Length: 276
Ligand code: DAK
Image (cartoon, rainbow, N blue to C red; front, side, top):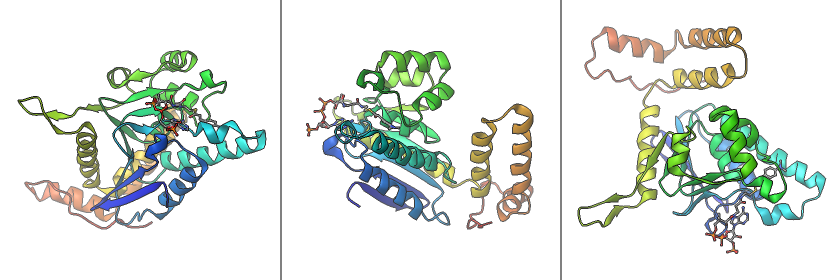
């Protein structure tokens, strides 16, 4: 792999898009490598993923404009499909994916963060969909996911004006769950950089998810994602089925057993994920 780093620490896997010189812009090779990395994640041991960009400045500054500029219609369609397939794989990945947004998240960068379950960002993060300024529409799901995540009106304003927004505004409109700042000491010196503080926060959140019952967490992701696509009557049936699916699993027996046994720590006994 030239452009993707993958590291596993306990039950948390971290994928880093590692093309810092081009601000981690997504070219075909990055998309292929990301796809292969996701396919290789060991779902028996990894319970949460973090997706981030290399360096302090940029998460992903969009699709690679240099590569895109010379595409024919057919090549553009193939590139779009490659991106959409990977983004959808992230969105429907069996375990949760946290985007740790460390700087620019523009165009395809904002879109890939929106394919993740949760976004947390450093306070230097910048989000935007600048595509209309380049003569194209957002092509990796931006028109759809942004409208669902914030509101149709806010999504239309950001997309039509191609205006970038800073971390605080992204938090205010609900695009990100948390904004993380560098830690400074009393003398005003930075003791933990914004990137390190961001990764610590992402790892803490991921570890918190990873210690929950894995089958239940997977089923929650599925229920939320699939339920949002249908009307409430159908959505409730999806939830019912996934709720029922948790019963008779080791997770459910251990989780409820802990409560009934008055286990003071109320910690879920760690059971290996059961492939079903
Ligand atoms: N693509 C390629 N290279 C990029 C890049 C990008 N998106 N963004 C930055 N770089 C490269 C720069 O060219 C520069 O390379 P060198 O000149 O050093 O070789 C290096 O990264 C550093 O960038 P700057 O020198 O520009 O750094 P600054 O700090 O001055 O500015 C910036 C940072 C993020 C404001 C600026 O680089 C910028 O505006 N970048 C472009 C951001 C952007 O417009 N992103 C959206 C791209 S459009 C499709 C599906 C999806 C898409 C399209 C089609 N289909 C379905 C077909 C998606 C489209 C997009 O994402």
